[in-house]
Image 1 (cartoon, rainbow, N blue to C red):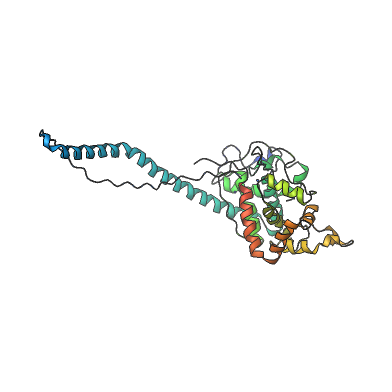
Image 2 (image 1 turned 180 degrees about the vertical axis):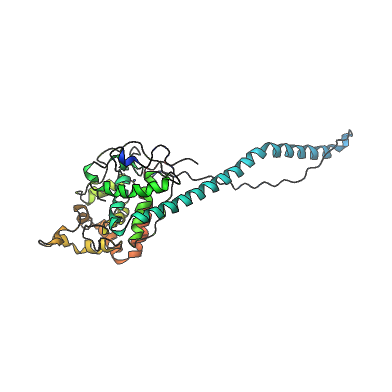
Length: 331
């Protein structure tokens, strides 16, 4: 499976020219706090206390009223702070929405159907380094430092394509590489006819490469693949759903430019078992391994029969993937 979108204020978009680049799954996002406190003041009576001892009830009422007034005055700054937070949250949300739409627009200018597979592969190789044990790796843009690794061969071209779009976005609003890649992968799927995948912004970029050897190896058998994905917080179902990304590209699973459920239909045919010819070259060893595992096979059959189910499950798994290991900006 090896082939298998926060503002960045520390790294300019021109990192491609300064250091070797390329990267690889989600932490809890920090969501803006929105207050639901409502404040309503009522008029207070001005009390004059008689000196008669028989008016204790009136005194008690007035003391109670004065205490209420003091409590109200003391909490006014606190309540006004909440309203300021509400305004700040609304502005941040609008800013992220505008940035998100801008990223999508610029990505679509540079990513064609023929380039979609490489851009989607960038996502897997940046997010795929996540390991729950130690909470290391993940969707952090570190791929820009990892382009010379053998497993990332060919990704320099895909990153260069996105670098052009990122430059246009950064000229208006700085965006992290992690966000840029996450949104670009989702757009690549959509451009090729796949589901529309919403991507939250706010990831921070890593300033160093992730550890080597964290990507699932394409030579793994099904048990090895399931263990590898489990360490990344991904289930067998999510493993099979995300593997459907191999429907794009030159691996032989249907049209290389159409995102659909052909991957699963062809897996069931096992064309690589035929003697000679191009059919024997379809897919990776990790693809072949999935269909030999009973648990994986159950999901392969479901997705082969129901493309809408595949689209829905792929969307959910993709969102989980691009949030894996992410570090999020504060409000």
